[in-house]
Image (cartoon, rainbow, N blue to C red; front, side, top):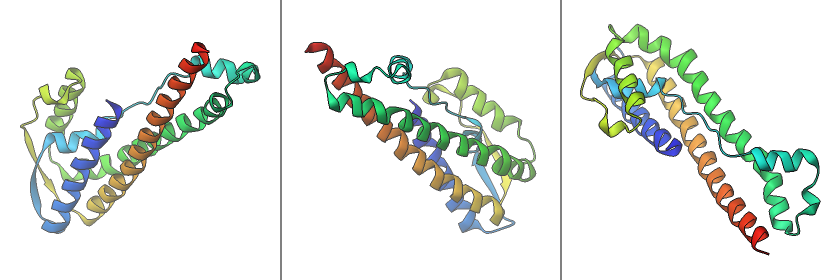
Length: 180
C-alpha cells in the first residue's frame, strides 16, 4: 500500500508539473483536487523490526548458523532508515515548499483538503470522491518544486521497493533457519 501511494503521488506530481510548465506562468488550470491533495497524504513506513532489533542489540547474532541471515539482519536497519529518511524529505518538501505555494495559487483549499480526507477515510483511493476540481494559478516556482518532489518520490519508491525485497529475503532466511 505504501508503494502504491508513492506511485500515485509520483504520477500525479509529474502530470501536474508538465501541465503547468506547458501552460506557462500566470495561466490558470482547472485541476482535480485529488492531484493537489496527494501532497498532504504522508505515508509512514513502519516495517516489522522488533525481533531483528532485539537480536541485533543483544549482540547474539552469532547464535545464528546461517551467515546469509546474519548479513541480512545487519543490512535491515539501514534499509529501514533509508525508507524513513526519504519519506521525511517528501514530507518536508510538501509542507515547507509546496503547501505555501498551493495556498497562494488556489483560492479555496477546502475542496483539496476534503479530497485528501476522503481518500484517507476510505483508505482505498478508488472509493474516494475524486471528481471535484479547483483552479490553480501556475507559477514557475511551483512547477519546479513539483519536479523536485517527483524526483524525490522516485528515489523513495526505489528505496521502498529495495527494502521490500530485503524483507522478503529476510523472511525466507528466517524460515530456512527455523526449518534446519
